[in-house]
Image 1 (spheres, rainbow, N blue to C red):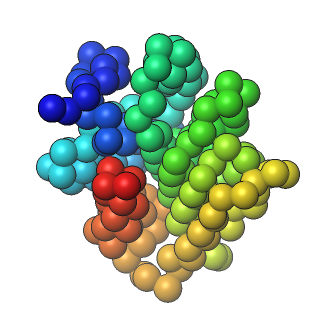
Image 2 (cartoon, one colour):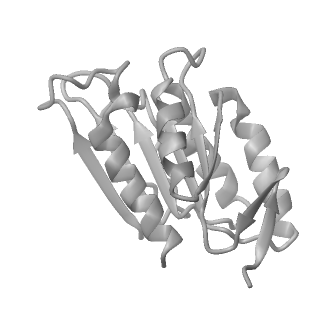
Image 3 (cartoon, rainbow, N blue to C red):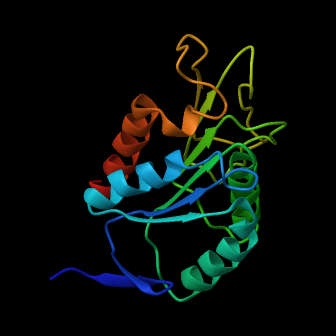
Length: 180
């Protein structure tokens, strides 16, 4: 018998991570996140896709649900401004002693350091180009991977969220959390 947790209005198996994908400005250049969501859903993972301004509401929801005893792993993925906002989310969740199991940024711009409550962070960026390697805040003991995709001419700021190679890497990390 599986234990079921409620996240918003959706049921979620306890062993599966809760994944939130945040779009960049206006959401029009982050349509690849929809395809990533579909790929993860096909593997049984609960995924929500939202505009980057949703991040504060998402933090409130996570805090409330953690207080109610819901403990599914948290995965935050963002593109462009959404990438900056998933770092903001992690920082706000740290104030409530809530860990982020996986944080993925796709071409963030002028990003803040990854806070200490993040266990694993992956940053996809282009040098020269959009984004830069992430740094970590004081007390960070997790793992940070900065992945420069500038060698792949098919990846630009407006296509990085659509890259099948990047989707595969993200899915691999999410599925590892689901099967731990």
